[in-house]
Amino acid sequence: MAPIPTPPAEPVDTPDAYVGLEAAGAERLARERGWSAVRSLPPGSIITMEYRVGRLNFEVADGRVTRCWKG
Image (tube, rainbow, N blue to C red; front, side, top):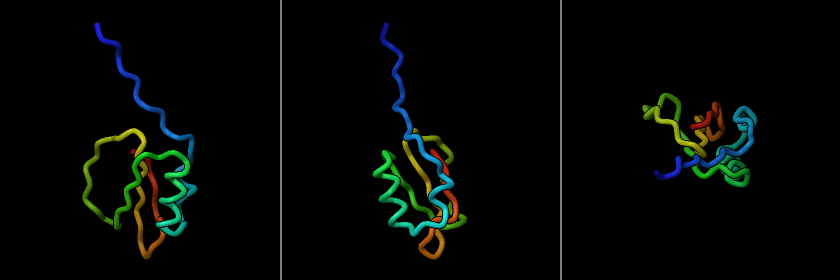
């Protein structure tokens, strides 16, 4: 029988720490901290709700992160 795969670990990070940062700088910081995917979205975007380990989502308005969440 095949072993059960172990999902990759997410970086130990606090999404709230990105709120208020300039979007490009926040994305650079997130990648430095180990996030494999960073997604920037305008407010009110329609997105799928699947959870992806290692992805960090930014809601960006006027060039600044206004909301941040994992998945």
